[in-house]
Length: 219
Ligand code: DX5
Ligand code: ZN
Image (cartoon, rainbow, N blue to C red; front, side, top):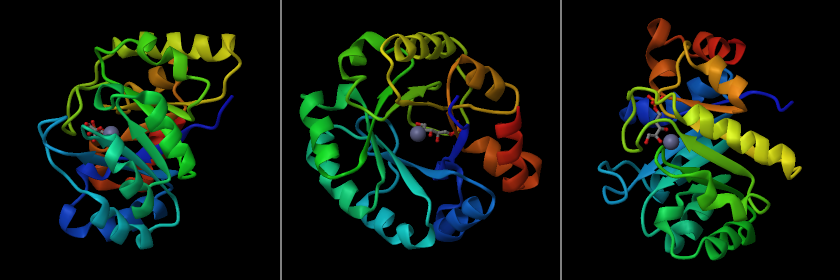
């Protein structure tokens, strides 16, 4: 059974204090930092890019779990790797050649993640499961924090977990979007071992990050 890890999303952080917010997350027990990169094209929102990630890297010693919601993505992979991404997660719809993009991330010695939007079926990535380190299951439509959890994706996680067991593979299953104290246990029981959370971690219990991370893990 894989250890349950928490990857807080800085999308819900105070963007004027991102360095200090990352320090707070690390002190609060975060296992990695979920960095949501949005280009205003693949998703209708715009956040940060390589220069900001590079400057944030010195504020933390834990992994940067970089979620690229950008399209086209292939030609930017190297920039995010050089900026300090440790895990680079891409969306299949954002590349013309998944094999090439996966190989590119591996060539740069980074962990490879592939993300499935709520409407995207597992079949789309079944041929890549033996080549990747992580599958990121979106439980909201990507683009914004604070959205409502879509419980129907739990079926997808169960399907992925069965495939992982049947094929004797070892990729992480990460769930992202609307994770809170009511649904985190169901997500773990379905097979997720990494929980992304922004709003719940930064806003619940008067913003007590340590308490919120512990509560998400313990459910
Ligand atoms: C949405 C992002 C998520 C989001 C999670 O496109 O990929 O990581 O920031 O935030 P919450 O936990 O508030 O849904
Ligand atoms: Zn994300």
